[in-house]
Length: 142
Length: 142
Image 1 (cartoon, rainbow over the protein chains, first blue to last red):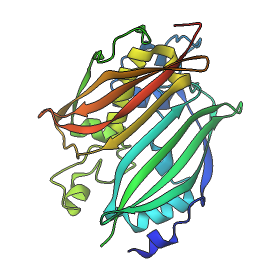
Image 2: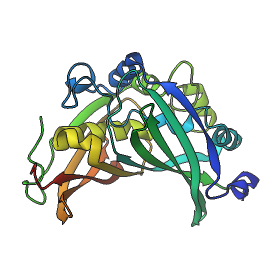
Image 3: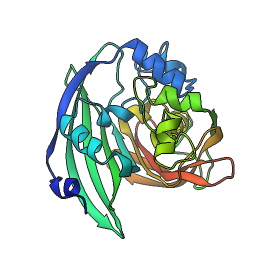
């Protein structure tokens, strides 16, 4: 079993960071996912445009989460994304500052494979919780 | 755009969402050219013994969420839950189709939770991702 896996502690803080959710970032995501829903570019039931629900998919692997990045870089060859969970609480609005914070919640062994689950929560500058996500990565042992 | 989700029969099949995924699609979703990894760079993918670029699992999550947005409507952004397992790797070019079928409706305090089985199929009709999606409707807007 890798030393890095042994180092992971449930509850361990993975770091936090913030960024601006620009209209350009939303457009880039909409184009990449070929999403034809008009709510993301014009009007939505929430008033103005909103962002797609899953737009924060990759926030859990961005360099801002320093501790996670440090571990991920060490085991890059053996990390596979096994599961992804979301709870959506509020739509994300263009122009708002987004705060991302994350922590490890669980690690376990199934068969010959080891898994780590971490959660990340995104809130906006108004304190609204937008989405609560959990990612489980298969951490293959050698 | 919203289906009367609380009124559909168990087993009702959602309108599928299909996308043709190319190498360029995978690169656009995974942050090329800033990000060079097995989702964006063929040389990196081959270094890790993949036949070519591996599509990021969460691109499929976005497709499933598109289907859920069409089915559940605005409440997907405030009461939606999505839980997915990634079963098989996807190598472009490949047509991926998000599908879903209503599994159950359960009354909860103040509303009804509608749960659907969701999955993502490749061109061989193999499930590359599967899981569940659900959303709660208040008793006043059913």
